[in-house]
Image 1 (cartoon, each protein chain N blue to C red):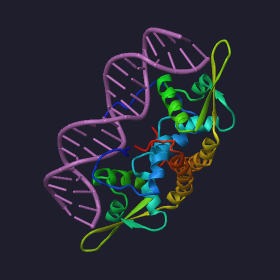
Image 2 (image 1 turned 180 degrees about the vertical axis):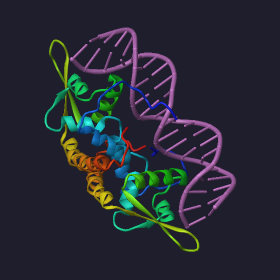
Image 3 (image 1 turned 45 degrees about the vertical axis):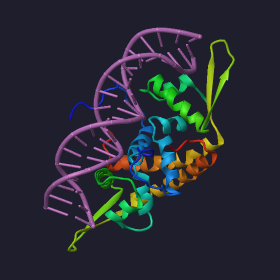
Image 4 (image 1 turned 90 degrees about the vertical axis):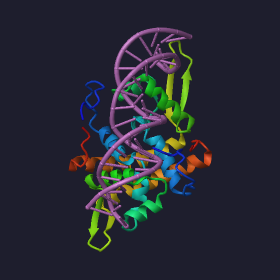
Length: 119
Length: 119
DNA sequence: CTGTATCCTTGGCGATACTG
DNA sequence: CAGTATCGCCAAGGATACAG
């Protein structure tokens, strides 16, 4: 609670703040992968967990919730006997896929060059 | 973020890791703005600092250094009497601008919707 | 199956002061 | 002008266990 970082009284620039805002979303752990895997078809919670190994359910839930609140994806609870939840991208979420694909392109070149250590 | 992490013996997927790697770069604080301001013309250290208010020189140097090491931008020291340093995007860095522009697009919609608090 | 609840660690980021 | 040097914080992530 409380006190949200003070840094000074900087009025953020009008345009670039959108970048920052969006990066807050995309920059979160696993976020690009989630969108990547959802871009062609809806997917269930455990399917996504399997797609993206190494993520704990807590973090995963947190990400999904934030993305849902931002209007990037939709959470649909199916009334089946073992509860099933399906996640799918919204229109706005779909608009992110070209951005991610552009990033993938550069990522590949980066890797090919060995420019980033990756570990 | 978490790339390094031991977490078990997960072989990372071959394609998505590029996204993650690239996001490590772009996700750093101020990074998108740096590229944004450099995309049309080279710029000096203090000019960039002025463009992007609220960043401390330490962090700024760290970012610039990492981007230079990754081959995203080039640092040129001009042999003037007060030392002058000019930063400019490499070809690879230029390839990032469409990605950032795509992100800007979504960022605007996000803001218009009030989907993200931005605070 | 789909998540919460707890606890803990890390490193990214910020502020300020100082140097070549 | 263009950076280091120090110091410290704290929120994002992770591990594990438990719950509806």
